[in-house]
Image 1 (cartoon, one colour):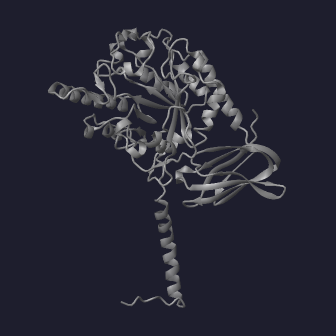
Image 2 (image 1 turned 45 degrees about the horizontal axis):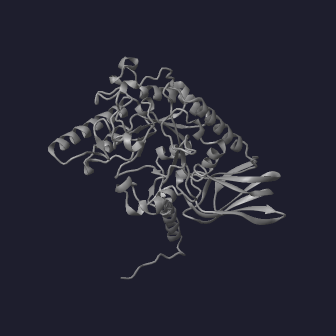
Image 3 (image 1 turned 90 degrees about the horizontal axis):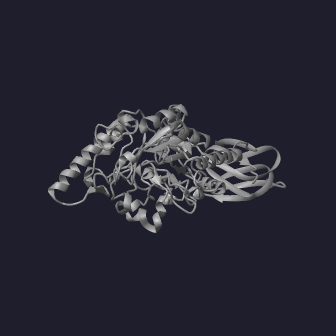
Length: 475
């Protein structure tokens, strides 16, 4: 078969070719763009928040015994009416988080004891059972209202994998007989009703976190994903074996290595023994670094308890103020989490009086003020598209830190880049990197220059820098 080619000398054919180019070029561009995983609005909001607080409260705080996780998972609470926070003041909790610069707060509505801190018609083991506030209290409601008052995005953490009250361990009622089967079915339906309450009675949540994951019906567990997708479609789901919108950063140090890409090769991360071997290998290295060629947008989170310096207290214990992270370690944590394209989740815990402890509040405020001091006054800032972007200052100045941000609404595009400074009329490479993502903070040896530039050496699609800024930060 002979392919007839148009006569390009003919005006009509030329116009036709031009028209086809106009029509096909946007289509080809769009097709190429679809290869770059893009964040959902909820994921975009999550990364832009940068700082999230995990507010941990459970019956352990009131039992007078030191919290040991392995014991808590298998030992029912002796007296749940020991819960009696006489100076309870939710406003103080959330105000302390606001002062520290947190944009998201996550409350543990339930943890390993199985007690739920909301008004539930699905389980008797909830606020209705308490003498406190005559059984009318609702910590989850108070938390949601306070978050809205202080313009902090509310999120909820739900523990279903362990429940000491109902005898559920690692998702399952123990045993293989009919009794265990019936109890498992009862537990599954109860959890589905509970999450329906949480998802429908309290408005929208920025993120829903199932502690340790949430096995679904395929693994013999409750169907929480379909309840989530029906009632909280605009939220972040974290997580089960089918879906994870964010991923654990591979440790509880509040840090990740560099680079940490926002994309991942699998739609879910699993938990413990349910994780793919590739995910668990090399001490969860894939969770820490992500995969620049991953087909799924799934940014990492970096989590650590505020009381983790020489201890690891997610829940309050008396006389443990000495393990609150010092300011310089929190700042280092910020650089190695937010500054490496992840959201930092810092665990905080109210005490048995119902207040955020004053030493913790003080340290949080110091942390917020220090981050603001460092990054509120840039020497210069610009943005733009393309493989090269220059930042020109009014005059030559000493700088020691540079911050890069991609417009991640269009995906992570940069794969390799250098930063250069013009010194005595010549360009000098001052940094070489790979991942940028939402934010990459680059400490450099001090240089004195009027002009610096970003040069992309490799990218997928045209680089889109939302911000390129320089700082001189004093110790």
